[in-house]
Length: 84
Image 1 (cartoon, rainbow, N blue to C red):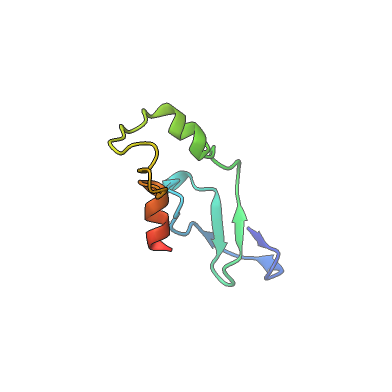
Image 2: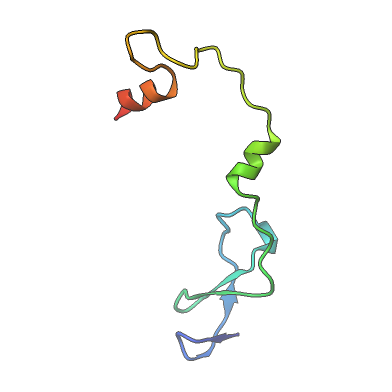
């Protein structure tokens, strides 16, 4: 395959795929310089996070939606303040 970085024909190999495509990963890397190229059509992307969330049932909540009359929040906001 031609490597535009090397400017000549070079061998390319499939590197380990961190995206989980396995053997269908379209990425190849030049064995000399490491430049990456895509071969063929890329596999379909996973659905966006909000579509995945819509397909799962919400987890039940045990904490009240609002904090006590002191004005302090509970749950997620309180955790964010404690971490920050």
